[in-house]
Every structure is written in C-alpha cells, then in structure tokens.
Length: 306
Image (cartoon, rainbow, N blue to C red):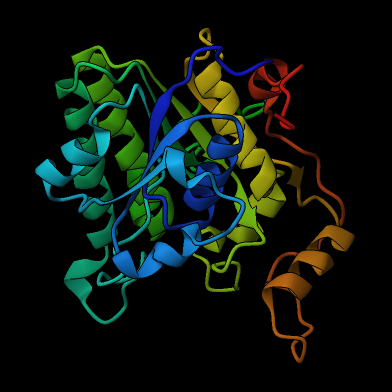
C-alpha cells in the first residue's frame, strides 16, 4: 500500500513516548509533515536525530488539559495519531499511597481523550483520528472463559470487573476508549483504534508495568499478547492511510502460550539476578484464544519501507 500521493500534515500527540516518537520518525520518512505535540519540553531530545527532515517537523507543547494548546497543535492537520502518555507530574496507574486515587489515572485518561476528540471535532481539517488503546480494554470480563469463540475487537473489558479486581490499567484504557468512541460517533469523527499488546523494547518494560496486572490469568486464558514497536507503528499508519479502515483493531506480534515464552519474557522483565517466573506462568502450553485477523487482512501489501 503506497502512502497518499499528495503531501499530508498530521499531528502525533503525545509524541514523547516510545510509540509517539517512533511514529514521528516513520511519518517523516514517508513524506508527511508532522506536528509533534509533547507534554514536556524536556523530551525534545527525541527529535534531535540527524536523520529527521526538520523542514517537515514542528514541535508543540500540548497540555492535554489545556484546550487551546491542543487546538494549536492540530491547526492545519488532516490527521491525528493520539497516543496517551501519563503527564510526568502525575502518579502511575497503580496508586498505592492515596486510597482515593485508585482510579485517578482513569479519570486523567478519560478527560484527556475527551479534550482531544472535542478539539478534533472543532477543527475544519481533521479527517481521521487513530487512537492508541490496549488489549486490556478487550479481554477482561466475568464470563471470558465460558465462550468457545476467540476474543477479538468486538469484545470489551467489563468496567465493574476491572474495578473489582483492581485492574487499573484495563479500567483506564477501557473508559478512555469508550469516551473517545462516544464523542467520535456524536461528532461524526472518522476514528480507528489500535488495541495493542504489551509493548516490547520500551523503557517501561519492567515487572512493574501496569499491563502485567493479571498476567497469570491472561496466560491461562490464552490472551497474553505482546507486540513489537515496529508493528504497532506500522499498524497505526496503515489504518490511517487505508480509507476503508474503521473501528477497532487488535494488534499483537505473539501470544505468550508456553513455558519457553514465559521464561524468555521473565528474563526480559526481571533483573539478571532474579530467575523466578511471575506467579502462574509456569503452566503447560495453552491455546491461543485471541485473534488479530481484522488487522492482518488490512495490512496485506502494506509497504513499511517507504
């Protein structure tokens, strides 16, 4: 699939994380003009590389709670890649020191998604939004083991189930994506979401990564999905460039489904001095019960070398 013939201007927000910064580099290499919207000017080092086409790159400071700064970053763009990154001055998903803050990040993500989608609705140029979500917004519900069919993009995590079992990452991603879809449908915004697995290779890939809450259960259910950064970025761009792409797309490279997979992941997540597997991941091979057929079909012929 070739990129659009006419030059296009897109915004990547937040461009300071692993997915966002890689999207900026890849889009520039494909000939796009890119508005890189970041929440912290201290992260400008992401765009200091000599390989960047600086003539086609503009860097903005965009506070996700400052509507005007979002509008400034979107000005003149016909597409948005939205990749939420927690503000550096905010606590993580699993807040332990404040009992009233257990769902704090869910509230942050919902408000940020609402602000950004509302800003897109107010522009006259945005034609498509690609919204980064998570597999954790798909896989968690009380009856997930009762069905014989595979989990796919039609499934949603149950909000009450996530609260009951303190799956704060899943709760945040589910509520934020639902809020985005509600606003997109109400405002007539053309949107697609990429529901990615555990992102491999990034700085947040440690045993404390909030995605890993419930890892043993994900493993037993055959839905413990991981994804390479390259595939995540290619999926975002493919979905943006294909005019027929709409809705949700599960995106993963591999399912952790056997002891060897679990050992390899444990060695990646844990310091070399620790060799024990995360509890529950020593089981025998399990059957994969999650499907990314929709995305796989779309990406046939996608050229990521452009």
